[in-house]
Amino acid sequence: MLWMVAAGALFIVLNTIMKRLASQFDPWMVGLLRYAMGAAVIAAPALRLGPRALWPHAPRLQFVRGLFHAGGMMLWFAALPAVGLTELTAIAFSGPIFICLGAVLFLGERMTGARWAAVLVGFGGVLLVVKPWAGSGFAGISPGILLMLASAPVFAGSYLVAKALAARERSEVIVLWQHLWVVALLAPFALPRWTPPDALQWALLVVCGFFGAGGHYCMMRAFRVADISAVQSVKFLELVWAAILGYLVFGSVPAGATVLGGAVILASTLLLARHESRAVRPTAPLA
Image (cartoon, rainbow, N blue to C red; front, top):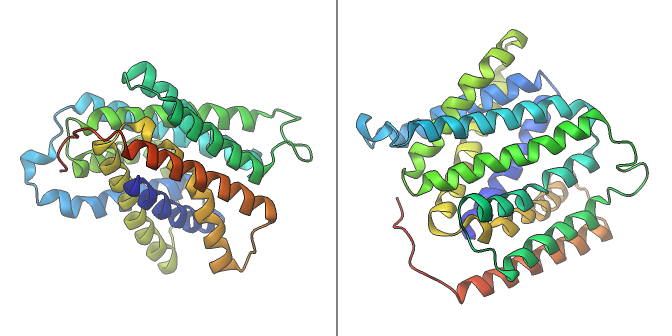
């Protein structure tokens, strides 16, 4: 769970920077260059393993993971211009529910009552914050919302494949090949929109590479030592980190609903952590 907490914190900083970049030049280019920089960052420690160690034991599964992740990104980018922030946040946080369902159906994990409760209560905390029913909410289901809804299970597929890979590959190798495949699959869509970044944008993209590769590495370490369904409620803590970052960077004071929702999310995560600590079992050695 601590590995997932670290991953979530890194991803929130990453998304904050990417949001700024996406407002300055084409979002497809931002996605492509973010993963290209991430591949360069993770390649440095991965190369120390030697050329043979870099070749995956399950290359087809690596490709399937890249296909899922690139597909999710394409749906996400296509939906982004037509989806409001409230709907975007609520739909994005439905991912853990799809992941938990997939873990039961495809990975044979035992979804305990405590895990379901933590995921559903955490998702309830998110809804307290974003309130998708307020205003127009989901009253008008637009094509953008449908595309965003479609991206959630596709991203879930990427993480389920990553969990399967965690038993066969080193964390560095999984992250490296994920980045390489996403770059290869996004390139045909992004390169025709090429706009040269300026010096500051290049610097921010390098920072994105570090935070993105670091976040995925922490997530893979979590998948190596725990059931994927056991760590999904930690995902909702990203909303708490986002509120804290918004206050520190932009001086945005969280609303009462945000504080209440954050407390619900934090409580559900801590209760699940306590429950899981009582059912510790032998795990695969770290790599």
